[in-house]
Image (cartoon, rainbow, N blue to C red; front, side):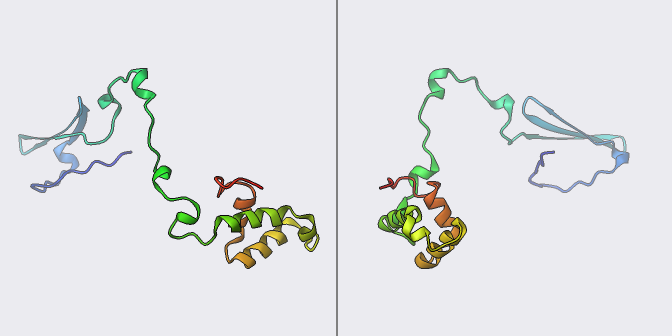
Length: 141
């Protein structure tokens, strides 16, 4: 259930004896309660993003190119927290596929662990590099 927050101007506490009733109609929340024979009514606009607020959009508007957050973030060695260069990434990929280098190890995991120690990065980062999950913009040689 979605939580609705009201900005309090005056604090009112309701009990079951007040018979509170909350409704949503045409984008307006209405709270109605009865206390000591008097009716209390509070209204507030619905600030959630709801379907009733959505306007039908023509197909031409939907085709409009959306900017992605990833387009705004520097990639690769241009990123301020980058530990690797593009040459490091190429070397990691070449070493992982090099049969002479791989012959020293029993399994792929040991190769990943060794490369991670050499380059000072986590072994899952090496895995993502060799499987083109990260650093995809660097072409394989």
